[in-house]
Image (cartoon, rainbow, N blue to C red; front, side, top):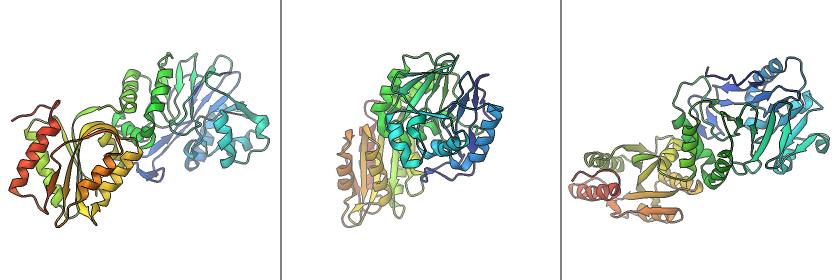
Length: 395
């Protein structure tokens, strides 16, 4: 298992979920997910969030072991989504004198999930900049609305310089999964938080004023080293900037003919010196991965068969999801295919036109059913235009 040791008085009490197949009932998580929870032991004891119902028993056992007979004073509610907040009711019933710490939005939403007796007497409402004194440890509250719910807040513990970052800096995968942080953190970010880049930028500005030695997210590993790397990634992602040079080809093909066109385009791009070309068959691609790659690369080709005078559904789903997630600042090419009335390019353009700073390059290519020799020249032209001004073009 990856390192979950924080300090003598701050303990990890979360759990790995290796049996879950879909996170939020939609995202494939082949390596599971972790639900992170922490506890600060001081003159006053604070539990930092609860855990998903799937791991209640393991979490309660970890909590009781950490408490070693002591009684907690506070439950900090950073985020009310059920994968972190399901056991608020469990804690209130187990420790009837515990105080609940949240902000005005927290307590506006809390009754939608739980019927807590005497809530007004037990709640501690905080706002941006407030401090909760636990003794040697002091929690500074940082409001982070819409990262990615309205009530989200983070906490900075000043004595040990720890940022409890809620869903920020989280990733898919259990803690004992040995994998690159960037890939699954990127897929997590763009699919769950990505719409709210402006709000993430606001929180990053607040965090830049703090001396942070450790980041404790609600999913994924505790981050202790090279923190500038993770902050840099979040800065790029939340500004919707290009992270990786290369071209991503998203293809929606009914019978495989459009995919063959994209394979030829990939070959041409590589011959012309593209640093990297990624081709995805949307009918078989993990959609969260497709979303991630559309944001990762600065140049994207959308290629779709025409279906019922519209876009083939895998492409429509991708484009509508990108629109919802605030897709912007990209250079894109379009390829359509059709036998008697190609129309997917027009429909794709309509969706893309509603997005911010999307440059649709010419030529828009129309294929009539299958790739012909005279189509190759069109693909050559598209490759040159899409690569212009960054990737080296070999004439």
